[in-house]
Length: 74
Image (cartoon, rainbow, N blue to C red):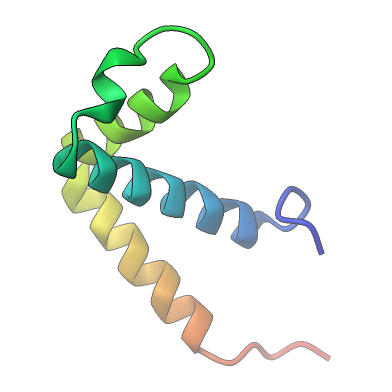
């Protein structure tokens, strides 16, 4: 199923984008020059990761635990 139609997968993709953009921002200042245009989305995701890092890390832990637990679907 596509990540756009499954809410848990959509949240996972957003969390992975935030974490990846934040990591790239801390290792290289590659995203600083892309504050406008379509590439500004990645700069904004890196800002979210920098400013809300405790909440993002907590969300990553909760998402990881929810993916490891078995689902009870019939």
